[in-house]
Image 1 (cartoon, rainbow, N blue to C red):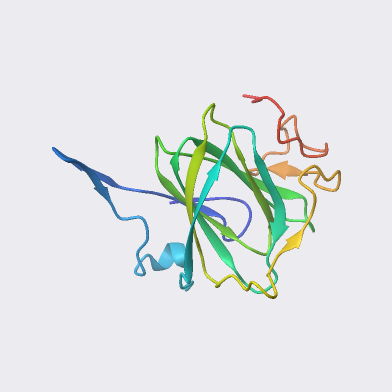
Image 2 (image 1 turned 60 degrees about the vertical axis):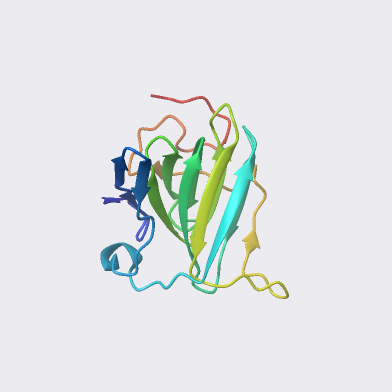
Length: 171
């Protein structure tokens, strides 16, 4: 399990068990206590996003936690703490299945970075309330999202600038 500088953001590798038929994998278990931190999954959702599509920014005020699993394609998943400017950036991929935990108190969003659509299953700890959604939204291109550090690094060239989902890879 990998931890990120934002408290509660973490990634758990999914164990694929191959055989002559294909593979089997457990993608969520209630006994993963160290990963779930007591969360109980209430709903599962499927998202299909075209290449370059950004779904950002929003946060939840009623304690919702999101768990992302990219099944096909690749997706950049970011969480941003407004008070400190800390950002966690994770690349989820169907090539290496991982469960990505994002506490809902952080602004968070996604962008499909593969050249073909991404398929993502995400689990949430609260049921969606159609009459009173638990979503505080910020525009995807808001100049107010200015990382002070990304994944604990202050020397990342994107630090100190408004977040650009389309910035080329810097590595």
